[in-house]
Image (cartoon, rainbow, N blue to C red):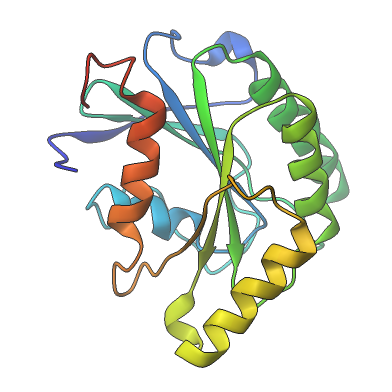
Length: 201
């Protein structure tokens, strides 16, 4: 995938602040500190576009990024970090649910998990919610460079079994450090946006 342009557009908490729904959107979701921002930056070949932080829970709004003037990447707030104030955590759920349930141009949700960690209750709840509303999604296991190749296969099978994914649900391993999985993830994204863009992005 050739990235001609990628830029931050705006941050929003309410639908009235979203940009016009004129292009297909790919949303990225996951627990705090799973490498979501690093994954987005790697896909877009931009080091600092989606801001990374050593402090989990920093993303408290929905961030919109324009890609090639024909696609939006949506960085959803990370969930599940206990040190974030309770009031903020309480607002995240409705904010994410409002976006996912009401955005007509949403084409795919990329759910990001750390391959070293078992799926959390929040991860399972989000998957159940996506299935209930029949939203297309795939799973990306990040930080694979931090585990051995032998352990990688074991972790992948365990997570797949715990989530009880349908056979047709893609499960992709990914490393922001090495770029492994980048092309495969782009291939999946293009499947969900190709009709919107007349055959290509």
